[in-house]
Length: 319
Image (cartoon, rainbow, N blue to C red; front, side, top):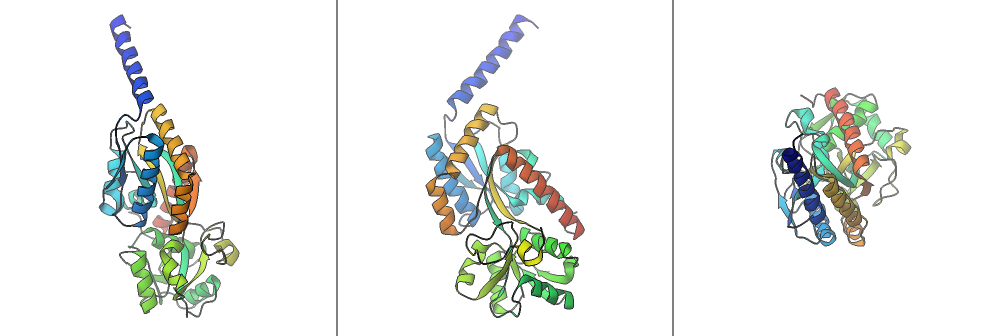
C-alpha cells in the first residue's frame, strides 16, 4: 500500500469519526409511512418531539403515504445512511413482500427499537349470542361460510390474524367471509349496523364502541391481558391456544448506518420510550407499550416475517 493511499484511507476514517462525534449537526427527517391524523402518525409525532429533545436538533415529521406503506418504508430504507433520515416501521413491512408489493423486509433497515404492540382482539356486537370465543368458533364450525368479518383490506394485518386463528383451530380460513374495509373503524361501524358478524382489531381501535356498550370483546391474541380491558381473556385462556398476532410499530433507519451514529440514535430512542411523556401519550390513546432493543427488534421482525409468511401462504394471500 502506498503512502498516498494510506493517507487517503486514514483521512476518510478520521472524517467518519468526526462526523459521528458531531452528530447530529443539522435537522433530522422523521418519515411516517401513513397519513396525518392516524394512530401511526400520532405515535410518530410524539416520538419525533421526544427525540428532538434528546438529540438537541429539530426532528421534522414527513408523511410519505401510498402503496399500503411501501412508499414511506422505501423512503426510509433508500435514504442516505447518515442518521439524518429515520422513521417509524410498522407491521406491514413483514407482510408486503409476501404479496410481491416490495422487496423490502425488516433486514432492509437498521433497527433502533420496538416501541409499541397492539394485539388483535375479536369484537362482536354487544347483543351477539356468543358469550366467549369458543362459542363463536362453534358457530363458525356449524355454519362455515355464513359469518362475515371485516376491519381492514383483504390481506391486511387483522385479516391475516383471523385467518391464522382459524387455521390454528383447524378451520378453513374461508370459513368466515372477509369483507374488505378502508379501516378498522369502518369495519366496526358495519358490525354495529349488522352488516358483519365480527371484527378483529386492536382494543384502542374498538375502544369507543366497547366503552359505549355497542360491541364486546371476546378475546385478545397475546400472552398477557389487555391493559385497557384486563377482564378480556387471552386466547391461551379462552382456547388453550398459543396463537398470537398484532399490529406493532418501531423506529428504524437505513441499513449500513455507521455504528457510532446508530448507537447514538438507539440510546435516544430508548430514553424517549422510557420518558413519562411517551408513557402518558400511549396511555391516553390506549396504545400498548412494548420495548425491544435493536438486536431483539431485529429478531422480532424475523420471527414476525416467518409467521406472517406461513399464514399468508396457507390462506392464499401470498403471491
